[in-house]
Length: 217
Image (cartoon, rainbow, N blue to C red; front, side, top):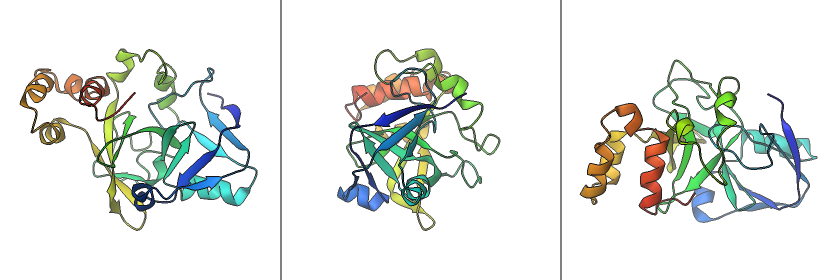
């Protein structure tokens, strides 16, 4: 896949870490921004680490690539996959590199959509992933068939792994039981999907999160 490049006219700002994000401590970048992504259409896609933000300054680029935690651009949030860690894999960068679309949740955490990450496919983000991602639009109709092969991850902004990495939890049945403990009707509806893969898919999880008002698509 070839990167398609856009020169950003809108302002970009970022937070260096989860604590700064929680406190609303944004740093603005008033320089030309080039957004590289893997879509022929000039829309924002979701489903993996498909975004790069590039300036004309190498030092700033390195900071955005390695150190920044979350970027806000055109009223959307993008989390740095390089900073994410999951208990499901011992891989150093289980979510690959680059940025992925993130949904803010009212409790201060973030939700991302990603292919299942395990010790067997620890870095999916740079090769296999983009054949799947290309068909999923944030704006407009979302392909339910593709989302059935994705899952949701909760980025726990208050929980660090090491000095600067952020812990990520897969939104599975066990976690949903906790999240929906005060809504037995919704929990029963969620658990009525008998097949585990379908129940824990991003298609089903996003539907529940949206209807609960926890995220807005």
